[in-house]
Amino acid sequence: MKISDKQKKRAKDLHQHWQKFSDECRHVKAFPVLLEAAKLGDEEAQVELGYDYAYGMSGAVDEDEALRWWKRAYKQGSLAAAFNLGMFFRDAKQWKKALKWFERAVQAGDDDGTVEIAKIHLRYAGDRVEGLRYLELARAAKDELTTPARLELERLLKEKKALTPGNLLHMEADLLDERGRYAEALPVWLKGAKAGDTSCQINLGNYLTSGKKGVPADREQGMYWYEQAYKQDDAVGAFNIGMTYRKEENADEAFRWFERAVELGDREAHLALAKIWLRPRGNKVKAIEHLNAVFSGNIRDVSGMGRDEARTLLRRLGATKSLRGKKTKAIR
Image (tube, rainbow, N blue to C red; front, side, top):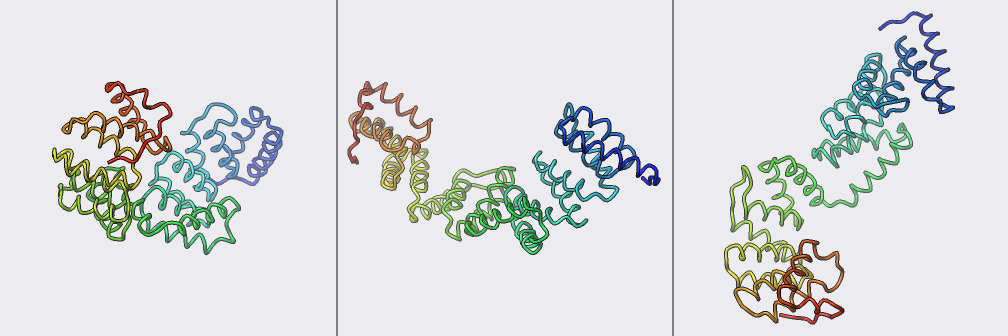
């Protein structure tokens, strides 16, 4: 929308009045002044008005009006409007829309947008290649970034340095899994598993032993990947093998693997051993010893559900007094 020189001057004067009221925190009085300046076509006023509507600075939040004024400012060439739209959709976790507006901000010359695009791809949206590409673009434009964007870039670079290739693959596969895109996640889990990441090995084992929508079960391969994790001293690998055997009613093999999980520090595996001692082995004394072992050490090492179940079993066995101050001996 083209505006006359007279309108521009009027809008500028209004904007200055708004700034004065805003600095004095007189938001209710400032709002109509800002609205008039925005209606006259003042780009900065339109951006500020969008912010006011988005966050309820002068009254109730009105997201539709916020989006309308930001888009109007963007059509007049506002970089800030494009960036604000990106931030709005990022906070709403609408990643595609957020990326679209940040990309528009970058195309218009706002380098801060490169940081946000990198962050969305690396932390949330799952396109690691694009994330790393924009991270490099942000690093190249470091001197042009605002202070908040530069600090965020430094955090992203530290995260990248701390993450192994397996960590990054796990993040990518996990995002696909959360969206139910199991068939796409499978090759990413496999790549991470082959790279030696135990979390990827265990998740791949979970996929293959149970099957997922679009991913047929393959018990032999699933057990193989659990065992690969166990060979790297991951107790979950041993525990999951034990659980698989228990579901198949192979108590002896299940017991053997739960013992291995205990040896690697998995105290919740004591609960699984206690159940086997109760049935089919029928040894109440051994079961109580393992149930007590659930409560030794750091309470955070056992899930709340596991602790509750162990307490319930101890009550049923009439052994609740054994929880009070006893130290658990090494057991088999």
